[in-house]
Image (cartoon, rainbow, N blue to C red; front, side, top):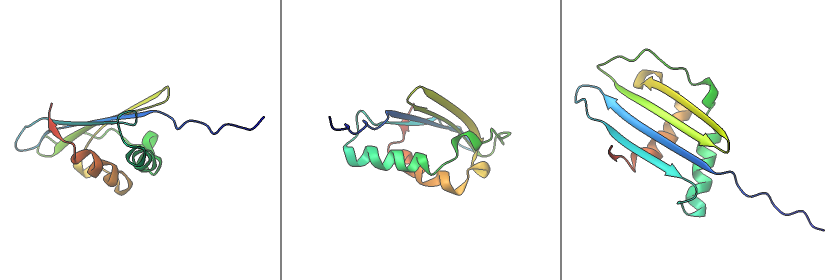
Amino acid sequence: MEDQPMAPQHVRIELERSGGFTGLRRCASMDTSTLTPDEATRLREAIDRVDLRGLTNSTVDSALPRLDLVVVRGDQRLHASLDERAVPAELRPLLQMLDQRMGPC
């Protein structure tokens, strides 16, 4: 009997940007179940490059946009709230992917 390849793990990510000078709330989400296979792979790879558990919730400066990020991967759910100053470089590509889908909440 041949080993069957494991199905890629389901991932859902949600981002809410709020605050800053404009005070606008904007939201985006991505879910591997609704993406093309290439998009789903890129999303998983972008998430793999970030130490999600290492994201620290920062004291939010009201003059800066606040980011609320939720990542659900399999049965794990991680949440972080941080401001623009606290965004690590390895998180920026993932945020750029989400920014392309940003709209009103």
